[in-house]
Image (cartoon, rainbow, N blue to C red; front, side, top):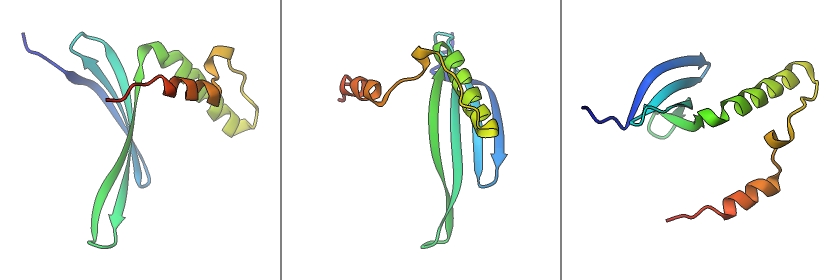
Length: 108
């Protein structure tokens, strides 16, 4: 049997000006699927006259899909209509929650 670390099973690229967004579905060797969203932005280096790409990536796991989708839809609706979205209490976290979580992260 062939060992797989991460296999891409589906990909969609969205071009938007100087940016491209990649929505990739990957699968772990245990068969669990997850999504990566990558923003790739083309940059020009004035010093040497070359182009490079700056990339930012997030990983989205299945247990977070619904919360992510609800938050994204609410934010988009706010941008389009100006109407403040209403979120369930556990979907909105304060800065204090993030600070507490960050304090518990162990770095090597």
